[in-house]
Image 1 (cartoon, rainbow, N blue to C red):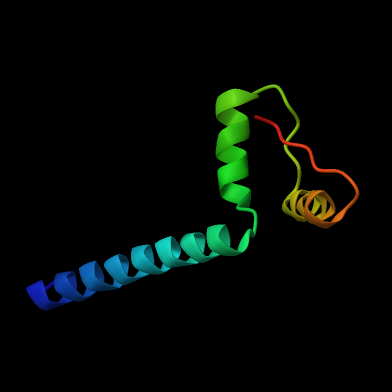
Image 2: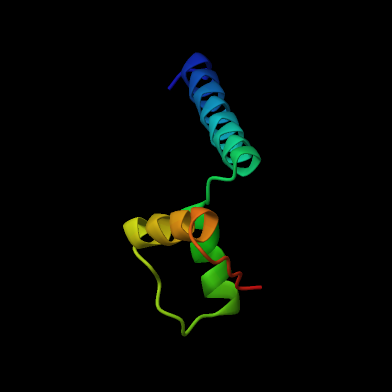
Length: 74
């Protein structure tokens, strides 16, 4: 591959990384829960706990945010 192709790939990878960062930042600002962060936290702090599916996780997050009660893990 030529140097131009490597430079293009590097720029695309950098752009994708920045987009992921921006998406995560927007989710945090607007209070949208991050499923990947939830899984990392669960594996690090509660390895024996069952892992919710993505759908279950978001359903639970909506119930906690707008439902009658609000609970937190840590």
